Amino acid sequence: MRIWRIALLPALLLSLGLSSAHPAQAADVETKVLVALRKQGGFAGFDDRVTVYTNGCVRLSRRTGPTVDKCLTKKEVAALRGHLKHLRLGRSEAQPQGADFIKYTISYKGHRASRYTLTTSWSPVVRNLEQLLERYWAPD
Image 1 (cartoon, rainbow, N blue to C red):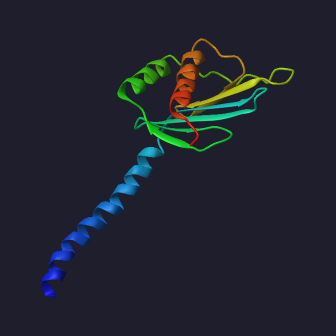
Image 2 (cartoon, rainbow, N blue to C red; image 1 turned 60 degrees about the horizontal axis):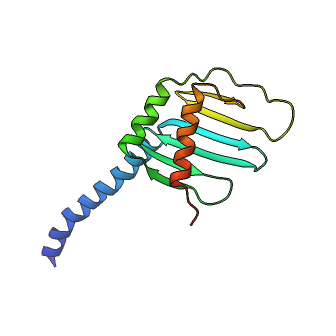
Image 3 (cartoon, one colour; image 1 turned 135 degrees about the vertical axis):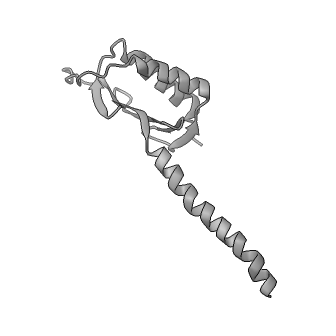
């Protein structure tokens, strides 16, 4: 009986140490957002969200269906970071007169702006993030 206690104690301590450290580290890394895109409105009633974290993983969601978490390839992260180097958020654009416009909101480096027409620095970032949504988001 005493041998079991001696053998189980190190295993128990090891498993407790790993399980208590790992979730905290994962949550800490995941909460650091690199860039986030929200696409809203339009005739189809879009409400798409793409959030890319600094660890290279992404969270994807649409108005309907599940939220999907994936990790990007190094090539995908490098391409996105390349586009982000040229991104100039600027000020938010006023909502145009009329209906069915699509509103794009980007959050990056602690700043957020919304636009209805995409500038030359916004287009590659939005296109890249929308491609990730199309590639990896699939309802089950």
